[in-house]
Length: 369
View 1 (cartoon, rainbow, N blue to C red):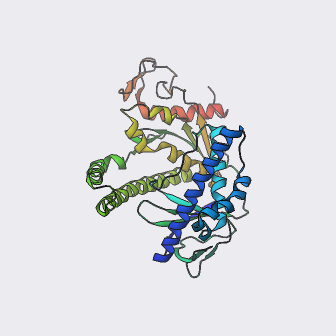
View 2: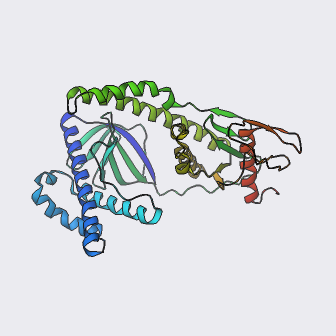
View 3: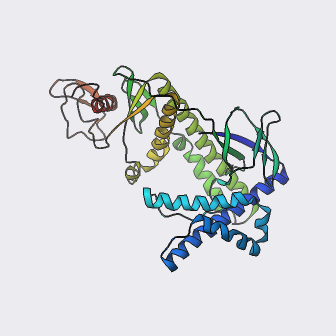
């Protein structure tokens, strides 16, 4: 399966219907979450999404406006609630929260009965009709669930999941010469085992002063006023720009690394634990290492490449990659150090990248200890 995201250009009337779907689906999600919590408190048992779906017609009797919304979209929200609880119990991701209209991105699912017309550049949605779209990529396959979203700027997008029946390519063989080690950081976004350093663009930091100005303007406006909404919109535009800049940079870099190498070695990082350091939290969040690794992983799957991992407790920067000497007193401020055994002068980050590659290949039995 592969997802394709397209920009929608609805008319004013269609935008009203899209907003109605978003609000109604958010209402049903919160209702379903409330039902699951209350049912468990009263009976000690969980209510399934199928039982919740049977209660939606009753809910429509007291909320007639729900009848103007695609019923399958409403049922899709009960599925999302059940998935949220599944992640909570299996992956310990946190208890499901109620959706708010203030969330940056609002969305609703369209499970089926929609169509895509590439000739006329339109997408037809149930209860809404044909909407103009920029279909910049052509795809073939069976249409699965689509998701219509609205950004904080007020732009509309549709993400279409397509099953094309094709199998993922087989993993290509790799050797020491076709493997690269990547050490992510704050000063440099990524340092490669080849010695190359990729500068961290720090998009959030470069826009921080402007963000503070816009945030102050929002806070000074009267709540509920049109001027406050205009100020909030300008702030949202800047946040959206930062997100797009970061995604563009990471997509280009991840594509380049996957294209040039057969295997990529990475260090497992405890990002949640690292952001608890308030001195580095903002810089770590600005770097967005987790989203970069995610992009590397799915691109590697597409092109038949391999992602190798080493443990988060491997002392990659404190070990000399030449002789194996362990410098236990190395601190974060030490960017360079000299091995007392073999007298090799190390750049801390390049040494770490080389060791990440070395440890990963040892785990694969491709090189000796």
